[in-house]
Amino acid sequence: MLAAPILYLLILNVQIGGMNGEIRELLAILSAAIVLWITRPISIYLTGILIPIVAWATGFVSFDVAFSGFSGTTFWFLFAALGIAGCIRESGVARRVALLLLSRIKPRFTSLMLTLMIIMFLLGYILPLAAARVALMVTIIIPLVALFDEHIRSNIGKAATMMVALLGAASAWQVLTGGMPGMLLWGSLEQAGYSISWLNWALVMLMPTIIVFITMYFVITRLFRPKGPELRLGMENLRKEASSLGPIQGIEKRALMILGLIMLLWLTEPIHHLGVELVGIVGVFLFVMPIIGTINFEDFMRKAVPWPLLLFVGALMSLLLMASNTGLGNYINETMIAPIYSIADNSVTFILATWLLNTVVSAAMLYVPSLPLLTPAIASAAMTAGVNPVIGGLVYLSCFPQMLFYAAVPFFPIAYDSGNIEPIDWVKAGFFYWLAWPLAHIICMFTWYPLLEYFGLLN
Image 1 (cartoon, one colour):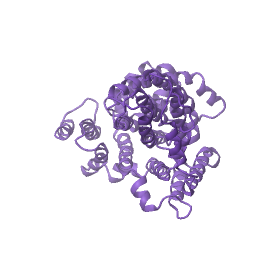
Image 2 (cartoon, helix red, strand yellow):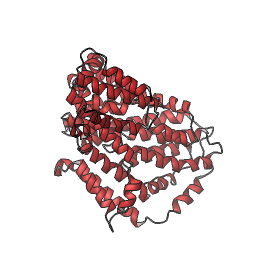
Image 3 (cartoon, helix red, strand yellow):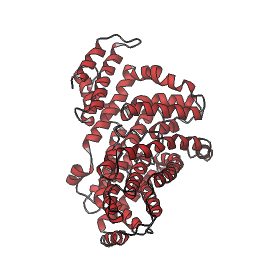
Image 4 (cartoon, one colour):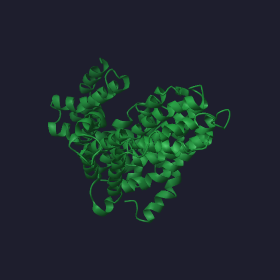
């Protein structure tokens, strides 16, 4: 709490080469926020919201600029995506799908792992938010571990938890609505002049996601191989739990119908040209409408939308405009991004440089704030290397070093709170996850992405 204001005042009053007063003032605010993010004396969400508040309160920028991120399409698109995810979760339909699939597997370890992989992939299209998918599946598999094996930290428990958590992380980039960082990247690309539809995003990320899913299946089933292949206990109990759900309820049917309509409109965006944010907001209204909806408005506002997260994203999107207006974005590009990408003269070196940049930024716990700040420079470096700038942004988004379990992402805390894993388990599997993404992108750079461009499926 002391270090943040001291650093703020220090940067304000020290001449830094190449910086004018406006850049220094925004850098001082951002540096103080970084100290608070790393040391966490207050919530990371509250720290993010303080950025535009301090910028406006000190007279550094106008109210319209300081809070510009709350009126943009990214803010309202995230509101819609979080709301849709909350409505699907509250309806219970995602839990029904997961239990029905699990209850039909053979009592073998490999069958369980394969089914969990398929469930996480399918839920990527059913339940939009990755963190919600992981939280849902962890609550389902915790009681299963007790049925399958008496020791909560058995290899079966570790493998199931790691499969859900790491593949949940991988599925966060599977679709545009997969998580807050993806929607933040989408908004940053839009402001930089690069657009991508929900369908194009899903097509681009389909193959690298599948490659990472398959890779992690083999990694996890070998790192946490149990003593025997059979799951002798628990399957009958699991089937009873699935059958106890009874026939599909009306609320679940309505949730599936509304979600199906939303996804259909997202998929056909190139035809009707309705923005993804407009479709999402209309979908939210359908979920809360009397008779046809699945949740009343009061419960929706109280349960379905995580407001701290939403306000945090609005603040970060405001940071993007402030950085552009002051010239901080150009300064970061010249002093930090350009040297890293000086070796990136082709697609492979671009991916490796982006992987390195993401690792450094994430190790400093600045992954999410970096998205609005660095996206324009990354897109520019991608074009220089002959890479589609949207793909360049997606490479940066996905190459996250998951073995850094402390790096301000929700998947490790959710998995660790289950009691099934230890930090070393996450580090071991997360290391292979970290290696899998750049390799997947390199493979797709010479196969999948050119194919999409050839058929006109990539803008």
